[in-house]
Length: 354
Image (cartoon, rainbow, N blue to C red; front, side):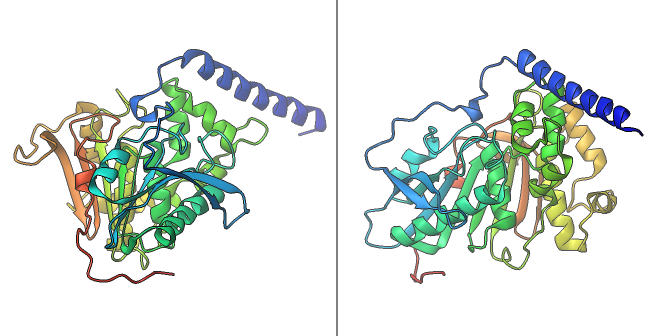
């Protein structure tokens, strides 16, 4: 290929990328999904605005913090904002933490996922760990009773924390999470959603989609720190109608569960290899089950005694400390989410974890 042909090829790629950006931007004029609502919250005066110095680049990342007034060590809840939100975003869990007298922090981790510093970057992951350690060291927190929760983009952040954070967090609750940025980019193109533009802004090179960078920032393909997570619980929740009435197909949740359970059970890292095992292993979710759930959007043979928040559970899997729950719902976090966190109410010891 001569120089002229290369120039023409590069111009063509740039043209296609720009066309796709304009196409999505024009056609995805839709209301912000409920669980990506970026409305600013008027925070209760009990919540203190704090600044956390980044351990990576010394920048100041803001957060809202509640310090329990209890004399006894109390649990800590780290609630992570959604894809388009930041630390100011309204959080339905904040008042519940206050009512229960739990320590609580709602951190910024480079803000909305529409720039390279956010969207699963090393800086954003480091910000989450910095927020955990800041809250543990500046509140009356039982350091062995620390729990992370998030929905949608916050669910992705929970999975990123599970795969990367070194602090021995007790539980991780990921609701309607994104696990594969490349898949979600093309799914967002097909659904004419603004998130495709956000991903391009975060990881593109000269407006061209960067698949390699998308893979690097996707929790589905990151190294699983099994030794650190031996005592931790991971809960993945997903509504069966997500991807239809919501923005994230249920395959993101299912694939993440299969990846982790498959690696724990078989020491396999490849998704295709794990799916081969899933065809005959009831601890995993088979391709046939996935297709049935995606196409039927229900499970005709579900156990009617198995419910969550009075809603049917269409599929439940658990292997070791990792579980997956597909329920009658959409792209959402259920109102009982807080009570489903496995919090230890009484602590017999208080020992700082470095």
